[in-house]
Amino acid sequence: AHEVHCRTLFSTHYHMLADEHGSDASIQLGHMGCHVRAGAGGAPEVTFLYKLTAGACPKSYGVNVARLAGEE
Image (cartoon, rainbow, N blue to C red; front, top):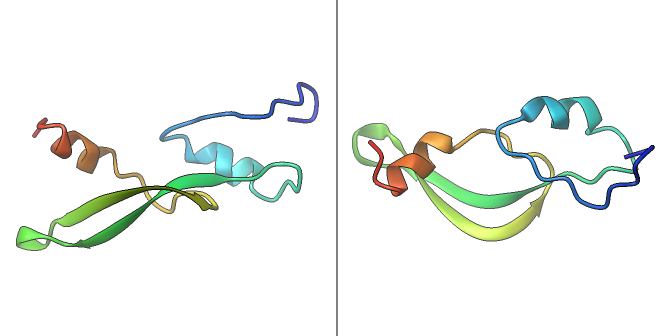
């Protein structure tokens, strides 16, 4: 961000970027918000809100995305 002056960088499942650059005032972290609740058998049921939310995503929901896509 300091050398290239990149306006947007998109990354998925790379939480190290957020950990490494989260305290840099010139970088703003964001993620797509979601609502998580206990589903059948206690498995997390994720509803994606399609709303940009401030901060790094606290957890990866890749398995839930695969389940929604029919990949079990």
